[in-house]
Each structure stands twice: as structure tokens, then as C-alpha cells.
Length: 159
Image (cartoon, rainbow, N blue to C red):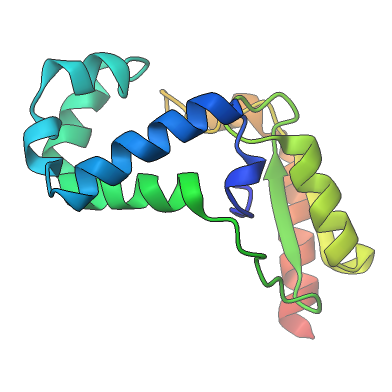
């Protein structure tokens, strides 16, 4: 829900990030994605928090090379992201997000985007929700927040 601003916004220790970067670069460089993808080590370490029913979908639907190349981008990208400052932004942000540093992300967006163009909606939804049902989002995204989003979109469509 939050825009990806670079690896420095990930909520991950420097050491852990460096270790993952090295391992994933080796996997990609030697094209080991397909072999690693099938191992129990990969499932137990990288995908340890994914429920079994989703694990099967991930393993069947995501191409191993795509997964590891995307992971490398997420872990290494440090270039400044260009934000179109005159465009409207609706950002759903969980202040307690365990994947990204929500406060740093918000601070950066507030510095770069005109206040009139930025709508921040705080939510309790997880970055990668295990339950993606309507009920989950009804619980974690208030009706008033949805109304604010719709109102903001309608105003900007007219302009």
C-alpha cells in the first residue's frame, strides 16, 4: 500500500539485509533460482511465516527467477525515487508495519508531496496479510477512511 521508496525504508537490520543481498546475488548470478526454490531450506527460512495454503500458491504461481530478481531489487535499490509532486496520493499506512519503516516513509512523502495532494490513511492491516478476505479489510480499514479515499478520488477526477 505504501510506495516503495528504497531498501533503506525496509524494517530490517543492516547485517541481515547485507546477508540476504549476498545470498540472493549469488543465487541470481549462478542462476540457482529453480534449484533453491524447490528446497526445504528455502521454505523454512525465507517463507517460514507463510501459511501452508498460501505457500502452495506462491510456489505454483510465482516464477522462481522473478521472485529472486525482485528480492534483489527490493534489497539493493537505493536510488532516489522520483515522486510526481503535483499528483494526488492516497497512502494506506500501518504505523506498526513490520516490513517497512512507516514513520520514515511518511516523513519522506510529507517532505516531497504537497500537503493538499497527500491523503494518509492509517490502518492496522499487515503489509502482507495472511487473510485477504473482505472481512479482513473491513476490520482493518474503517468505513470513514474509505469514504475519504472515494471523496479524494472524485475531487481529483473532476480536476
